[in-house]
Image (cartoon, rainbow, N blue to C red):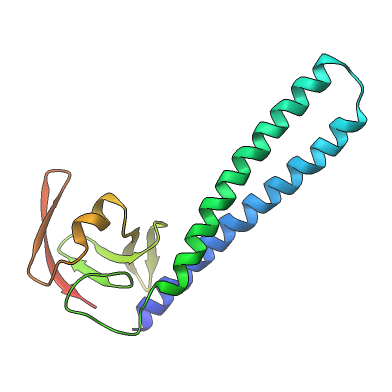
Length: 149
């Protein structure tokens, strides 16, 4: 239970860091747009402004995506265990230990390595609903599920 709590905190930190970075990017772009508005250098001005608007639009899409991830965080249930893999499960295989949450990649806690993956990731879709003793194939390699917590 304690390791799942630490992993969930790690995932939350990563997601909130990305959220903050995207919001800062949007703020910086909007500030640049204001500066561009004060400039009067003709075509160069219009091109710069158009590029900043494209950047702002892209950052807005990233913000929507990260907000979707933030909405998943409360749904990650770590307090209950189950005999099948679901959101919040800690899955032990002979090679990796997966935390089914959001995709933040490899992390090391208490000298152990964990891979934080999303349900809709390629491995997540392979794991969902499986039980201890089941196997799955990823990248032409077969993995056995040793334990689920």
